[in-house]
Every structure is written in structure tokens, then in C-alpha cells.
Length: 216
Image: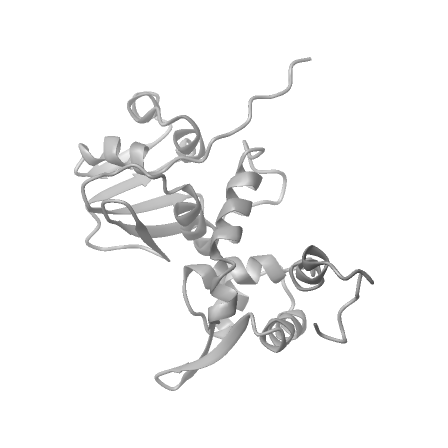
């Protein structure tokens, strides 16, 4: 592992992983690259809380650890997960599911981003078989879209002009938690545009359970 990183002094796989993944912003960078390759400026703009010099440092560390790699897209340098880093995909998805269990309302200062919303679609995809469709979701300032196949999903940041279904509103988190699509719409917690019959498919295809508050 990298000499610039703090070692836990233990010959342990989890300790070695923590040397890289435990650094501030590392998991967020990997989350964004899980959605797809990004240019430096795209990573920076998508995460306004990270200073440019720290982003540069983290990218160098992750590249040196062979978790990410640089490539060329046209005339632009992009960062993407390496084959080794791609093996983290199911780990990142399960971490996202685990973290979402205790997410209800945003804490002060927290806002969704396009990348976090796209990652949520990857995280929340269930094993349910549904008819293929495209969906665009908007939560606060963030928008993402996904192409949903029978058993899988491909998600990306931003709007999708040809989406079959569009969902927007503060009730999106509740919808992912309980799947009560019709109730959310009737209560005005979400608005729906497009093929409304697909709302049932969306509720089957995406689920991010939330823990019930502890009694007392």
C-alpha cells in the first residue's frame, strides 16, 4: 500500500483496505466513478466540498493503489475504476444500502448531488423482474436517470430527455423505503410525469429499506 498512507500495523485484509478507503473523500470519489468515468472537473463540480488539492491527492493515492486508472475520452483525461477497483462495486453498493438504512431527512447542510442520486439508483435496484423502461428522478437540486432492464440497471447523472417516467418530490426517499407509490402521489409527496403505469414497476425495481426508530 502507499507509503503516504497511515498503516494500522496489522497484516490484515480489512486493515489494508481501510488504509485506502478510510481516507476522507475516497469512498465518495469511488461512488462517483462507480456511476461512470469522470474528468477531474466533473468530480470537483459534483463534490463542491472537496478542495482541488485534496481531490488531486486522493486521485493519486487511488491510482497508485491501482483502484482507479486514467484514460482518454476524446481529448480529455478521465478517471475510471480499474479491473481491480471494479471488484469493489458490490461492496460499495452494499455499503450504500447499509448507510441508507438510517437515512430519513437530510441533516443540516446536506443536499443530494447528481452523482449521489445516480448511485442511489444503483444501490436500490432489487432482484425484481420488470419490463424495461427509462426513468428520471429529481430530489432537490439533483437529477439522475436510469435505464432499467428486466433484472438490472444502468444509471447516470443528469436529465434524460426521452425518459418514459419522471418522478420528483420530497417523498422520493419514503417511496424507496416503503414502495407505497400511489399513496405518495395521492399525498402530493411526489409528482409523476410520463407513463404512470410504470410507477408500480419503479416501486418493484427500486427499494432502499429504512430501519424503524428504536422504541423509547
